[in-house]
Length: 179
Image (tube, rainbow, N blue to C red):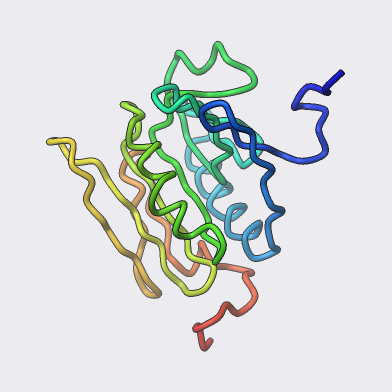
């Protein structure tokens, strides 16, 4: 008898009837996701929004899919009824790796764009000091806001500004970054 996902030693993503095992993350990946999570958690503490890091599933019903975003925020009352997955995020953050970058920027972003609640999608690069924030404007179009060293990243959907250097704090030197 198959074990329920909660009892599995590894995580899987579910895409339209197929299950795919997910690779383990690097130290750099985990540190970056943790930095973003902590900044969001500290900022949103005590309010109506919840922040989740990599172990909470996110359902994209329009694509019959479940993902494990690195970090996401939901402020939706409807998400409080679900303890094992959420479906109405306002912000999703993915930490890129060389093996997932194209997928995170392409097919995964295409799926996330089908979430009516999603206001921002952020991509944190592991190879250079760079955070790309895609923000849905009032006409429904996605606009890119790129941030690099010396800039302050604005997560407008949750009213948080954080320096790029704070996001990359405690990260060992990354490729192409001479610090």
